[in-house]
Amino acid sequence: MRPKFDTPITRLFGIEYPIIQGAMAWLSEAKLAAAVSNAGGLGVMGAAIMSVEEFEVHVKEAKSLTDRPLAVNFPLVLGEYEKHLEMVLSHGIRIIFVSAGSPKLLTPRIKQAGAICVHVVPNLKLAKKVAEAGVDALVLESYEAGGHVAQEGITALVNIPNVARQVTLPLIAAGGVVDGRGLAAALALGAHAVQMGTRFLATRECNAHLNYKRLLLKAEEGEAVVYGHRWHPGRALRSPAVERILAIEAENQAVDAVRKFIGRGRARKAAHDGNLEEGMFYAGAGAGLINDEPTVAELFDQMLSEYAEVVQQLGRSI
Ligand SMILES: Cc1cc2nc3c(=O)[nH]c(=O)nc-3n(C[C@H](O)[C@H](O)[C@H](O)COP(=O)(O)O)c2cc1C
Image (tube, rainbow, N blue to C red):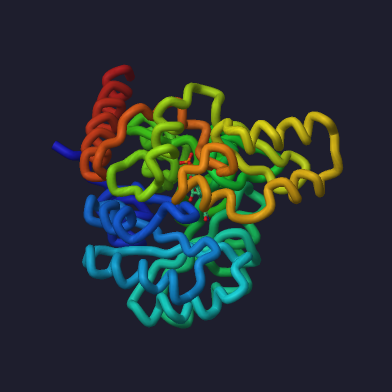
């Protein structure tokens, strides 16, 4: 029998399981997000740098694939995020995740529209700041995460309890969770749900190019590395582009050399074209633990039964 959950996050979002699929630039599109919501978690569509019109296509499609709660994510580096926000509100999206920017920009309008505002933060300092701005919940993204990570590199074992002790908001832990053990650990550390990116990348419903999935499935421990330490760190699988960046950094070249080399469009080249030479294949430290490509429904089955087993074992050991 599947475990039942009742946490501040399952209640806030009206979902069955405390499992959230994190936004992934070019990879968290309608089919994946709807499958996660249909499985009883929460699917989040990432706008990344899509135009309002491009993103609207995904929002409409996802709405047609599920009648369960669905969410969107805007990185505030987007030029037109107010227009994105009005568009998703007009389609009845009521859960908005915001990352990379000030919580003062969108929170008032999201709250005024009666929607739920969730902010992504990497540490306690920023968790306190977004709590003051009146957001409804936090995603705490620790250093294990795929995609962009914070320079100070705080890992989940320390980050989650630190924030859980000092900030009373509903807390979603992101970074390094790929299975039922990870879910149990995050909840034990004080989180009320987990957000996973990398694990969902290797599911049937994710639109990632075959080369991306192959690279991820064959990755071993330690192959999702952090680059850009002195500029804008990110965690990605080792590839020619990442090796080049690490070499530039090892040569101690000016920070601008890394920025120039990365340029624009490498995430999309990986996600959609599977370009092994030029693409940046973002993935979390948990990549080495992933070696299958289930459907989202199968993944929920695996995770939830492993979670139940781990919790029972822990109970028996006292
Ligand atoms: C390929 C990829 C792209 C991502 N793009 C975004 C993004 O556009 N916006 C965002 O807020 N987070 C982004 N993330 C972070 C995820 O939403 C999630 O928090 C993270 O993947 C959790 O860590 P995990 O990969 O170890 O599960 C991305 C992660 C990955 C792996």
